[in-house]
Length: 207
Length: 199
Image 1: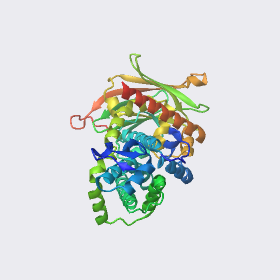
Image 2: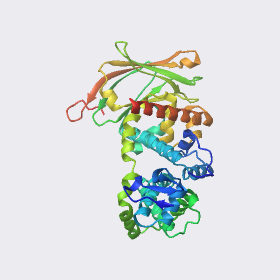
Image 3: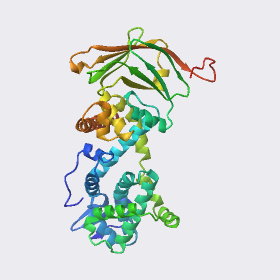
Image 4: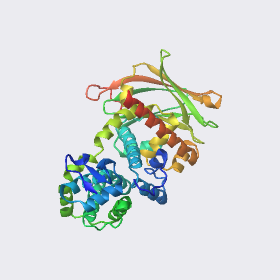
């Protein structure tokens, strides 16, 4: 396995067998092994791709378990720093299972409480240039502009279910009691409403 | 990108991750899958954008339709300024929207016994339809329905009476008129320029 001469970060490729595979399309395991086995700029390109691929997932995990967007952003950076450092030092025994390793590290970090300012500053310094790749603020604003007419176009019952679920943080049984339905019907209505929203947003995006 | 990946969940199942309905076991299953599947990670992020977008719309006063007290409570916690009116069947109310209002809420009282859902028609005094909505859920024992409209929408409404008719949902086969209400809409008011402060 040989990294092609560095040209431009994400567009580099890894050579497996007789053909070159762009880093952005290679398997997670191949990417992890590349980080483990390469050095210098070659490793940096693979690390960037690994970060691009996994930091958003860690951030989502953080959003679920920390319920704070800033804390989720911090978590993504901290976890990826640990993951890349361990890959570099050969401490990841099964690079092919890198997804599980990133998830395990995320779980461990969420349960941990000690995050000092020095470490945080070092992490920000290390990954500052990558921050834009995981910040969905622009996407969010775009979706917000399309969202209003799509939410308004839903059937009344389905809009109420979405508002109660995602704004008022109510469970299906609580929503069922509030609108006179069963919890199962609420879940079905929620799924149907989400499908309608996605279709509407996609249609508006295309037009 | 793993050889041992579990089947991809549906978008709805992924979106359930962001609800309070998800069990710890189901959440772990989704997490395990998503950390091995970039496509599902993107869909999970899309579901997150949808739910945060819905929350952002509500917080900005874009609440449009029939709501519950749980939603009103959340609006209050978020500092959304809500002006409320209440009226019974056959009643009319003089109503206006003030410059600092975000949402207008009307508690529509009535006898909804035996009704599962209703349709609502809002018509201008001229007879022209202003808004129409169907399948408004009615919980058992309900004595009122709560209608919310963005203040911005009401500000743009003409200053003439607007009549609201609630009917049993067409889907029930009845379409029986349950109640009618009249909003004597007095337009948009500003505390800085009006001496007629009724807020």
